[in-house]
Length: 439
Ligand SMILES: [Zn+2]
Image 1 (cartoon, rainbow, N blue to C red):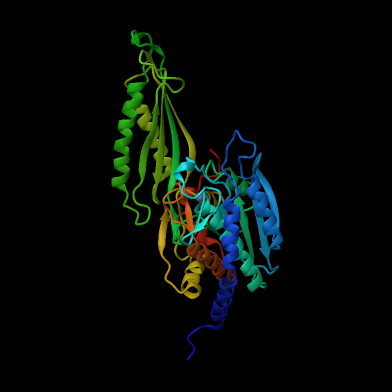
Image 2 (cartoon, rainbow, N blue to C red):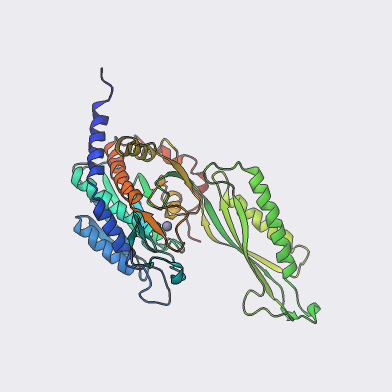
């Protein structure tokens, strides 16, 4: 009795070989090397950027035999692009990660120095160990393993190691604008998600609302126009809208509820506050976090209407609403070939059931999905809560598992027949439709 079709059987063998070909010591070594090159972006420090770590990575990937090119997303903010193909036509897959890390903050809060990459108790400690030099190292070692174990695999794989994810995501935006995402059928975003398959990530909008009046002496408020009461009404109206949105949407099993949060309120908008000076301008920053199903254009309109309603009682106050950043939520259907490839990698090569999760923030994958229309799965080594904290770490076991998982997933994804058309990309991609611009 035949139970396993021969082609699938051979894919399992090849995926298993690729996973086994991952050199665990090398994944650890590379992660540590990358952590030791600080890549915190400090605009006032000429060396405070991604250049050194990008150069190291570019050299390493070239030595592995990949075709490497470096592109500046902005001066001193390089993206590294590394390609591998056997020459046979087939699917294209991107493994994506960012090279920048957030600041180490107060060094005395660390019990392991932030850029020493110490190994202790099965963990590598350091800024960026989880977010996400571990993920980048796992991707590089996975592709190297595939190249050695499955040299005839059809299709192509591109490693994208981009700058500025922790800022305005200039790196991935430039990568997409330069056409580097074109012609690819899927992307694995190697962010720290505890090796959980994340098919959904929250969207985000940053909205700056300014109420402008006229500055005056506190003893003579009638000589000016006070913008503060309108700003206060706006914040109250926002809280009602937050409740409305939460009541109008079901809690997402992985992402929870949407939130509209006024994060800062400043009056005066510039300079020192003084008791006896009535501010001429009040500014409210609003951080909006969305879940699949919400429409960003509608939300933006609603916030504009609330700002206008707040100002209606003070006709002399001028209000402006600026959408500073718009990052749509993303959702990849569970039947997408990339999802199936990763699930098979878990079941066949890792010998365990996959776990599923969701991405609470946005990642570079947001723009790969929204602008480049590529299905994305976010999955990578590292505790989801640990990024940006002191004593950031990545578990060595999880790190090596990620590399083996990527290697097997590449084989399953590239080894499968390509879908007859790209229809799957239209699946609920509606929210991303109009996202062709930068903020
Ligand atoms: Zn990250």
